[in-house]
Amino acid sequence: GGGCGGGGGGVRAGGGGAGAGGGRNRADGGTRHAFAPDCHSAVATQASAAATGAPEPTSAAAQAVESAGAPAIAPGSSGASGRDGEGSGARTLFEQLFDALSLTPNSPADLSALLPSRREGRAFTVTFVNEMATDVGGPYRELLEAICTELHSPALPLLVHTPNKSQLGAIDKGKRMLNPAASSETHMRQFELLGGLIGLCLRSRAPLPFDLAGYVWKQIVGERPTLHDLARVDRDTAMLILRVRDNSYPACPNMEPEVFDAAYCGVSFLFPHSNGRESVLLKPHGADIPLTFENRFEWCELVEQSRRHECAAQLAAVRRGIQQLVPVQALRLFTADEIERMVCGESDWSVAQLKRSADVRMEPSAPCVTFLWEALESFSRAELELFLRFVWGRSRMPRGEEHRMIVDHLHTHGDPDERLPTSSTCFFQLHLPAYSRQEVLRARLLYAIYNCRGMDLA
Image 1 (cartoon, rainbow, N blue to C red):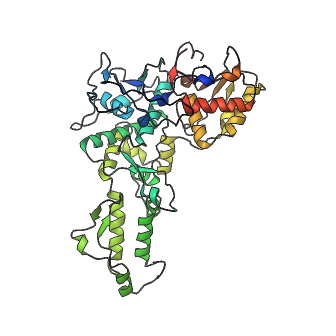
Image 2 (cartoon, helix red, strand yellow):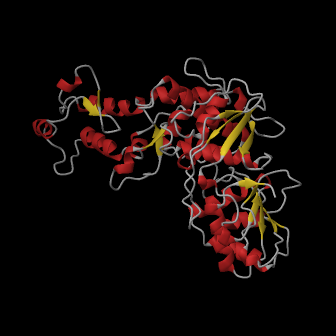
Image 3 (cartoon, one colour):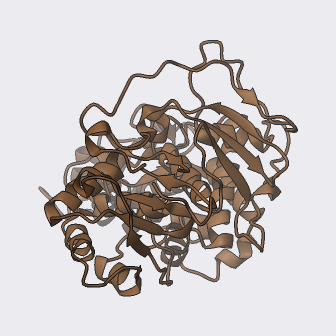
C-alpha cells in the first residue's frame, strides 16, 4: 500500500497479491489495542474476533489464534487497569476503554476524557498494537465503530434484541433495547459510558450505528412512548393491550362483561417480563387479582407502564452519561427521530451521492473509475457499509453533510489484476490499481472489505 500523507495515518489492505490474502486480517482476533484518552493514559489488552464482530472472512483468511497473556499497561499510564489474564479470556474494546477511563462501580463516572478537542475533533488518540498506523482520525473512527459492533453483540450484556425478534410478523426485528437484566453497579457505569459515547457523537458529529429501537430514543430525549411505539418493540403485548382495552378479541368482539371475564379468566395483575422468563406484579397481590371487564382499563395502563419503566435504572444511567457531554435539556429541542439521525448518521446514503462529491485524482474517463461506480451500484446495503468502513473507518455518513471521498491510482508492480485496493482511512481516500475489467475490481474490492481490516503503514 502507498503512504498516507507522508505517514499521517493508517493504510488498509496492503497491496499484496490477492491470492496471498493481501494485507492483515482484522478478523484474526490477535491484535491488541491501546487507548490514550486525553493523551494522558493508555491501556493495551487483548481483543477478540467474537467481540469485534468482524464480518465472516472468505477462503482461509480466518485462522485460529492463540489466546494472549495478561494485559499490558502502557508506560506512563495512570489509573488504567485490566484483568490478570488467568483464564479470563479476551477483553472487549469497550471494556478496555472502560478501564482506561478508570471507571469504577462505587464512584460517579467521570467521562470528561470523552470531550472532543476543538482542534482535532477527537476525544483521544488510538494505537492499534502491532499495526503501524498513526492516528490522524482513521484508527479513532475504526475503534469507535468496533466498540459499537461489540455493544450489539453477545460479547457485552448492555443491549438485547427487542421481544419482536421472536414474534412472527413483527416489524423492527433487528432493533435493540437496553437490557433490564444488566443491573449491577458495574453495568450501571457501563451504561453511563454508553451514554457518553452517544454524547460524543452529538458533540463531534461523528456518527455511530447504534441500532436502538425508536421506543428507546424517545425515552432518551424524555418523550413518553405511545402504544404504537410499544408495538415496534413488543407487538404481542401491544396487541393484547388493545384487545383488552377495546374489548376487541378477534373471535368474539364486544363481549358482554360476564363473557369477557370468562375469556380472560387465566389473566391476572401478574404479567410476564419482556424477557419471557419471569413475571412482575402490576400491583400489590396482583397474582390474586383477576383481569375483569371492570378493571380492564387499569390493567392496560399498568401493563403499559410496566414496559415503560422496565429499564428505568439503565435509562437513567445512559442519560447521566450523555449529560456529561451534552446538557440533557438540549435533547428536548429535538425529536427522537432527529436525535437518532444525529447520533447514528445516514444509513441510506447512495452511490450517486458518493459519486457526486468524489474527488477523482485520475482521468474521470479512466476505466477503473467507471468500474468502481458500477461495482458499488451492485453492492448490497451491508456491503456498502463495509466499503465505507474500509475507506473511512465508519459505516454511516454524517447527517446533512457531504464528504469528499478521494479516489486515486495505486501504482503497482506486475499485473494490477492480482493486487488489492488500499485505503487511507484518515483522509477518506481509496487507492485503486488499474484493473482491466469491472468483474476483477468488484471481486478484489469485496475481498478487501470483508477480509482486510487491519491498518498499517507501508
